[in-house]
Image 1: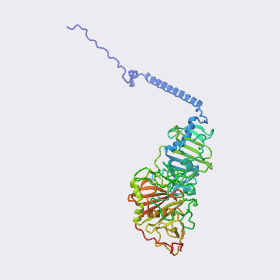
Image 2: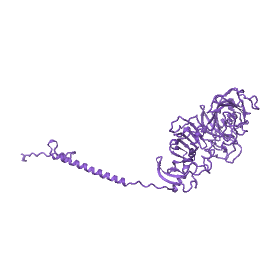
Image 3: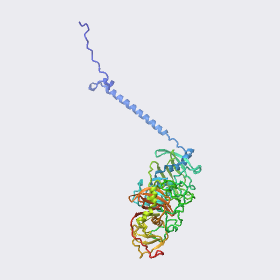
Image 4: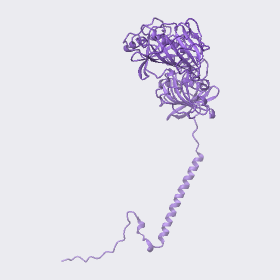
Length: 601
């Protein structure tokens, strides 16, 4: 029996607040809602807007007050250098020397006279390879390769005004020694560029006390730098590698011997008996500067050093033992175009320069004024540092100079016999001998007749040439109206041409041809020589071997068969002249005169 009271029904509870609606969800919605609900919502919105407005006004008032009262921190005043900063400034040039290479961007002048330069510098050779442009470049627009004493240009008047990075492998043709119009605006800047490297830190007193100051802090190359103001170190009475003749040549490792006449084997003929002199009256021939220099000197009067000697050493010629590799080898004889030393007291900049230097003593930027008040800015791109490839006129690409191996010495020793067996060779001449003048030539060499016959003319004037025939009596030459790139007429014309005779060694072309003739007529053991590098020519692998000669350094390009494919001579100007050879049968090369004893017509 159920005694529990009857369950009483409970009234329904009002729904509670929802999870999202909050307390406002308890108010009725829709048309049945009380009239005061909308007024309550309106008051709350107005309150919120007023609060936000008050906050915005307060923020604006605070910002305005801050702007009115804020002032930038005072810049640090210029001051003398601290000892640490002075040490970094003194180490800038040696740091450049150790870093070897750097990309660069140079601005010379302003406005319509501005010249822009983009490229690279290799302080170890030293060598600069740049593209020149800008509104003020004029006829100098194009590619340039330069050493401290020489500037080779490849003008391109059709190039766009804005320069770009040069091609890593430079074009083969079109290079010439820059004349005054192309070299004048660039030479002071390139001299400044080469002067930014030295093999050692600056000695005490190189920068006079009180002339160097700290100016500011800045950023360059994504690195913090200090901006310093100081003159260039006074090195007018001190020469580093970039100032000395034979720049870039490693020092001999052992005392050696005096210089040797020439070539792989011993030489014959009269070509070493006459002093160098000009070729007045010969069309197509250009007299190099300072033709009165004695044999064994450069055109600037600086003595040519030998690959074997320390200063003042002398002795008898000795060849390194076969297969020894290094025994008896006096050291590498790497030659580059000679650098012209700056005259004492010559200033590269007017006044002090501004140096942007980081904590590792690396220069990132330099500003100054060239003589004459021309502003110049040099920016160094330290991470952009490819290996540079000099053009043929500057000696070609770099190698690793070393002594000859046994097989290389054997090939070098039998070169003379191999060339005599061939009988002769076609010859193609390229000789940059003066600013704006590159001599071209073609013809033949006969080691059977011991004679050579070429047509030679300037590249800029192909319609005029000189016919030249070389033999034991000297150099016979006559003017001709033909093209220098066309082989000379056979037999040599006797009518309508006036043949004159000059002594051997009259100019660099004569010296080069005389050396080529001696290759096939020489006998004996090879002279001490240096293998500069391996290379290729006419689809053949060759060894480039350098030997000091009386009139300049000679480079022999010898293939694996022991045949000479190219002969190079370092000219008195400092360039390299090339004579490319194609061994084989050649036509007879008769004398252009009835008697070899006296000039004829």
